[in-house]
Length: 139
Image (cartoon, rainbow, N blue to C red; front, side, top):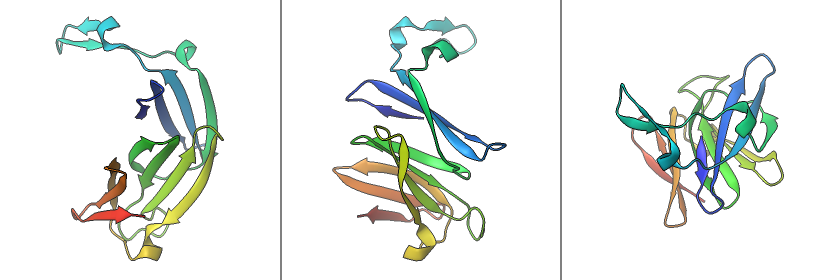
């Protein structure tokens, strides 16, 4: 999942293995204060239901999603494993307005073959981390 703070939208997404698609769902950002306290953990819990879905769309199949972030109308999602020719490290950029994948980058073409771990923006720079703890700036 990722959060669009500007538009107060929550995006959840899931790999649909049988269909070989990835489905994105959008919800209004829930208000934590309106949640019900979970007795076991002592925290507010919010459950989103099918009726809460604002819209959904499908994109190309993501393999083993490792991390994702939201920035300027796009979801940046990393995936893959080290040394795996089928599930290789890669970046997908999903435009939520167009409801489509707009970019796919195989990190091996950039000399980055370690398993993807996390991606996020910091001060307008896209930062990517692999499983060995290397941090990259992606331009």
